[in-house]
Image 1 (cartoon, one colour):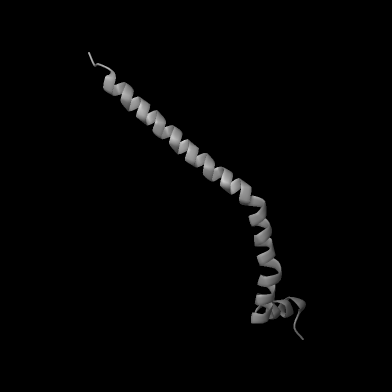
Image 2 (cartoon, rainbow, N blue to C red):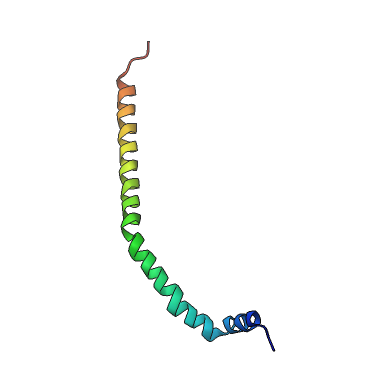
Length: 72
């Protein structure tokens, strides 16, 4: 007779158990995490867009300032 550990391992190795585990545990957890993190991901994306725009504006202003400055 197999031990309890071997029985569990043999059960998890079956395709039906993997499919059941994926459909009943992993997919709902992924949906829950996605729904919870959705706002934060968009916030981070918008933050990066604004940060890039600010950096480009600073670069433009710096180049404009350097082109008008006279070097003595």
